[in-house]
Amino acid sequence: MKKYIITAAFSLFSVISVVAQSKKDAQVSKLYQNYIAIKSALASDDADKTSKAATEFIKTASAVDYKIISEGNLTTLKKEATLISDARNIAAQRETFFNLSDHMIALTKEFKLSEKPVYIQYCPMADGSWLSSEKQIANPYYGKSMLTCGNVKSTVN
Image 1 (spheres, helix red, strand yellow):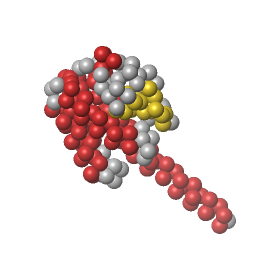
Image 2: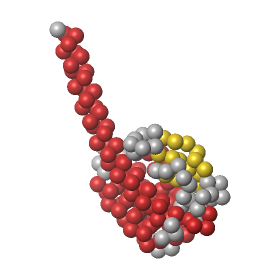
Image 3: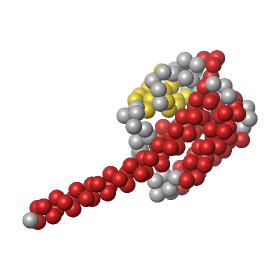
Image 4: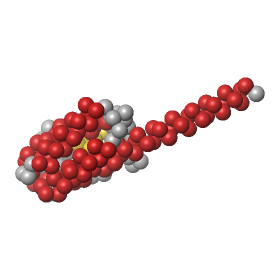
């Protein structure tokens, strides 16, 4: 009888733990989706769309619980997204995107950002990495002028 009670208690704890983890992942996944919108807008050379996507990123980051991502990390993410949002020039937006990407890549080590694979891509010309939801390269650092420059460094499943 004790064995069944212990097994049941362990199972319940496991279910609660999985549910809590999936709630955390869901909040960070929304942040990732907003990040992808910024990346896509940069790849299409659209400064206004990039600014709007960064504003959505800030709103999402503001709603993330500090227990999930530390306050310092969230503050950094929001600061970088604010710089992108406020900049009306694509070159300045791309410059800040380097830092935003580095911080988002770090989150891939702690959270499941997506049900689908997340690709960490790298452009040797820009010496910068970014996250992508697709294996195909769409370079946010050069946009249409060098859209396919880069390669997949790794895949996070």
